[in-house]
Length: 200
Image 1 (cartoon, rainbow, N blue to C red):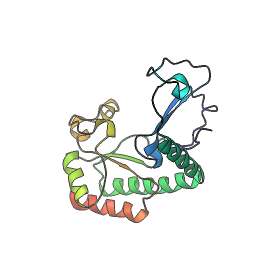
Image 2: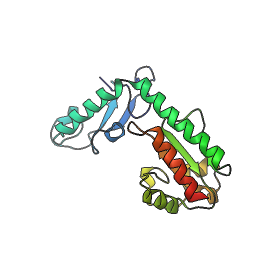
Image 3: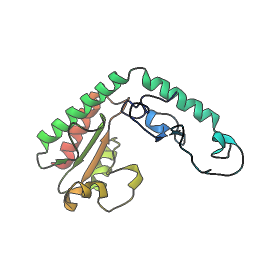
């Protein structure tokens, strides 16, 4: 049975008509390095690795049973209170974005305020570089990012921000904050206070 919450939103592969879905376990606090691939019945794939007959003859190699079990347990725990989880993340996200708009009127919130993941915040601040901002946040014990993990270390402005019309001079001040299971509202308030100290 496929986990109905993987990451931040409910997923029903049949209802949503999903043919293939890749899943990263660390999004659910499973160990890094474990994932899963859902393939709808009837879709044929070439072998990824020749050799043994593991993974329904699609990928040879010994399965990491301990991490597979951990992923299954993470899925089980994630489904226990999905509505409460989403409600908690939305509350923190909406409070953060509302306060950012009030405190930093020159900033730009990227993406729709309604159609976004419940824990996702992406904001561009003028007159500061993401690298500088992240170093100052890190010094105060705050983990954040200037973009996706896939593009970490890339000094060029995000191609995604460019595609949605964010000017390059503003895109270089991008901040991505993601709230999760273990975050609290006092932590969100601390983040806002720290941003005020850095940006003013």
